[in-house]
Length: 198
Image (tube, rainbow, N blue to C red):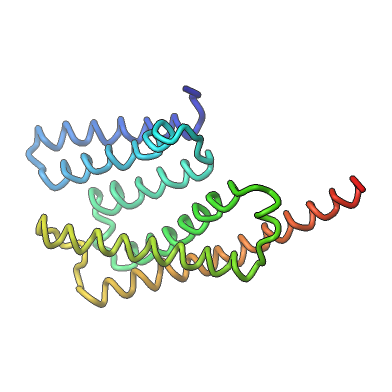
């Protein structure tokens, strides 16, 4: 198992949340304990994906994922920054950007010939829809948590849900423009390489 920067950050976050879990249980801070427990599970997801599917996720994606968990679970829930209305919206915007690059990472695993032939319009739509789907799935999770665990993740009901989905979608749209630019550069490099080869 490679000990990359992403892996070190991943395990560091899990250890950090484990410490919070233990101290929260001792101090009987059950909300913090539940968030820390969820943080441990969330932090280990990249490791389990790599082990299960015998693949290696992009290091930058793992770093971005852990930083997002830190911002949402620790700063947002435990420290209490979600008390500022803009923090939740800001994180949903970032999550849309993160999901866009995750979708692009999946796209980049296609065969070179297939990838370079895909039109930029299709890639743009794919990235935006990928981000929107991720935003919708997250809202389903929040709704389920509120119903089953009696949490208040969707504090303002439908307004909160729609603002979050719009923020995530906007993040995906912004990132899609950048992703399409990367794709166009890759296609140009491929054409230049083919000309040199011929």
